Length: 182
Image (cartoon, rainbow, N blue to C red):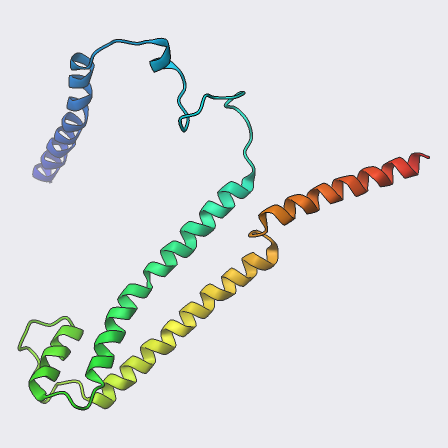
């Protein structure tokens, strides 16, 4: 146990040293020539206007999270495409026995020559595997579309229209207040 603790301690110290070394070296090496332009706030190449402590609309964050969510979900299509492509290749009944063995090894990620002629994936089994993969993908894509429809129905994707609706609601509530005072 002491040996493991010593290794962890050495690893932690080495990691800290490797992280701090460039920072300390940079303090001594980099030039110190501050000018008014260099120390001013830089934001997208434009001079800053107003305070930096303003509140952003939450919709910026919602749109960013929705993009990340759907972008990550699309990544799951790539492994499916690999398996589906291999299974559809094996579903071809015109393949020779040697080619079928090579494709079976590749599909199941086995070393070359592992599959025997008795354990080769037949074209009917490969077709069933491809159909199952397609059904799985359609279910997965259906769930994605259901989530997209829900987000759309909530109005999270209606950027301008919701702003117009808020302004109309404000103006109608203000006009109703004014008419109630009269």
